Amino acid sequence: MYNTGLTSNEVITNFLDKSIQEGVMTRSREERLQIMLSPEELVVVDDFRFKQRMPSRAAAVRELLMRGLAAVGYAAAENGRKSNDFSVLGKSLSGRKG
Image 1 (cartoon, rainbow, N blue to C red):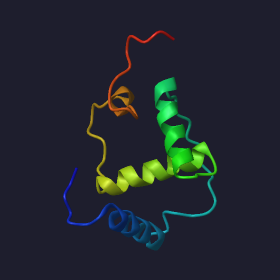
Image 2: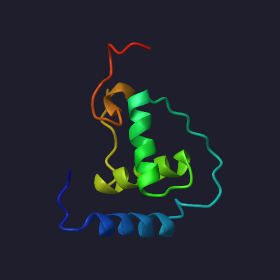
Image 3: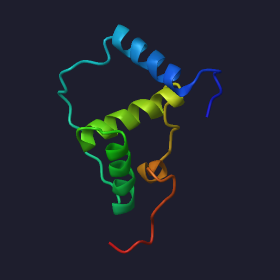
Image 4: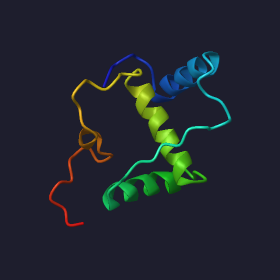
């Protein structure tokens, strides 16, 4: 993680301010993003959602996405990385029974 000298709330506020100024954040959501989560990852998302009193899973995922982007300063994924490298729990869940 990058050390910018800012608190997480300041980083998130700066991210939101910049996004609004650039017109990135709008009320209409015209694109659908479908993701697959393991049962363990879904538990983590749901726990976050309920602790933060979020109205829906989608709202919780958007909030987590926003926080993650703000924390890394919009860092793009490196070429050659696979979706398996981006587990919510930070580890591959290969070998689990499905």
